[in-house]
Length: 98
Image (cartoon, rainbow, N blue to C red; front, side):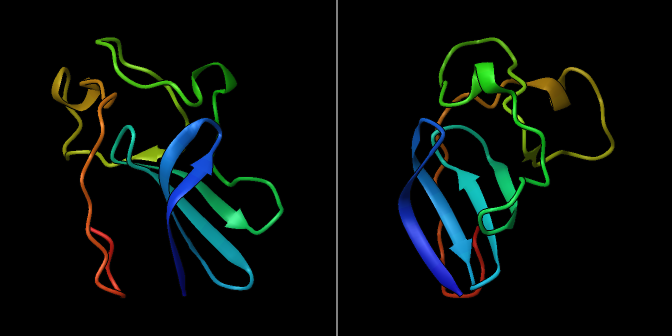
């Protein structure tokens, strides 16, 4: 498994990319936590992306960046719809991304 930091994806400069020879997963750290891409390398993203929101960060409004966001369960408003527009910290131990 290849781990890349500071990966530039669609305007976010600090993404994390995990990949092997066939698939890749890209998580944003400029906003989130959110997995913005998953799919075969060079192929279509399995997640929807909203072009007008890609690369944006900050602000108070909830944005539909795309990808998949980490949710609390059970789903409840307003907790589940709080904007995830700020940067997040992470750690990688060679096996787990937290």
